[in-house]
Length: 456
Image (cartoon, rainbow, N blue to C red; front, side, top):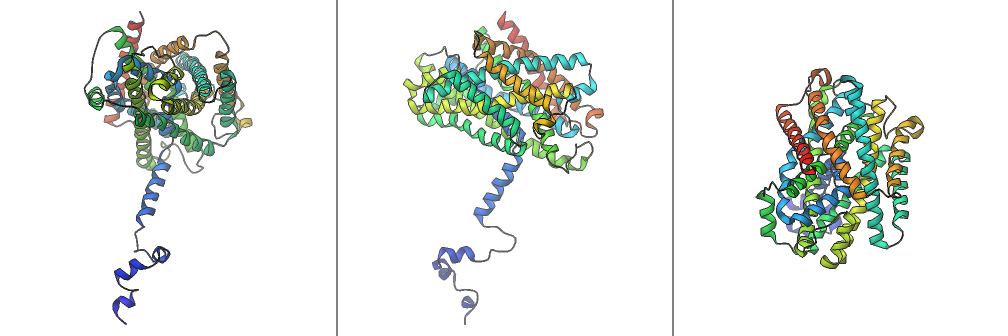
């Protein structure tokens, strides 16, 4: 018997074996088949993605989609560059919020309560509640209008349905399952990436608008810049990601705040960084494609007066076709189902921590009654706005202004706390995050001033 026969035959013979036989052949020690290695890599990445991914996706809520649609309709390609510019600052401030929660085992409101006077804490929480409720109302209304575009029927009935689904999911679905639902809902944002395959794009102009900043000091242009900053860097995102890091830690029995387990800090910080940077990149990529889609369809046709996400979807139909309109509408519904719980949840976390209530989606409803009551009431009040004469566009403008005014002081407190050894122990912010965090704070402060000036 030859050596080849001893070892199972020649290479040529092995290739003629049935596929089943080859699959059953032993693998080399220490190595996985390429398909299993790729699946293993994907699985590890999915495990890393959590609060950062859902926070980034929630940033592209229906009211944010409306803002990006307005920008694309009014200014075409000229503001695409803002998505690249804002990314490192957005990612840094969200990473800082995540670190605060994981290191201390408390959310932002809980940390502010430990260090600062009550009037500061309750003032911030009150502004957050007000802005979030208005955003919830606008998002529910946009979801109802998008459903009406998709299948017809009464818009307000859809608003009620989406509200009930959101509240029931948060209240009765266990956190681990619910967080998985949120992860899957982020896939709805790919609807906006998909629209580029059904519209004609002038890529030379698009690339110029992406990499060559266009600056103008006209009132409308400055107002658009402020709107983009206010939409992408919002207080509710800070509170949500910080609280979700705490929630994720509490759901694992052996996990502790990093101040009590500093040896785990490098691994946890790496996870937070990857999760946040990918989540924010996803968020900005989607926002980029929303602006691009509307720019190449509505702007070139002279339709510059888009006010809502639903109007943008409806206007796309005669220009880009029914499929583009369908994708846009599906994206509004999907992102709304993701964002409404985040808005309500961040408000409940903030108020609950401020008043020292038991908080957390990991707890059952009867274990955190006040927390779930705030979540439900905030969402229901938002729903109620759709049954009043309140102008949703004007309400969103006020919400953006409140977010713009509230964000800089919250960011200041976050930076001070994350740099304070009393709060963070030996795990204070590294130099690069301090620089990016303070730059982000300065940019948002300038944006707030610009907002007030453009509104004057």
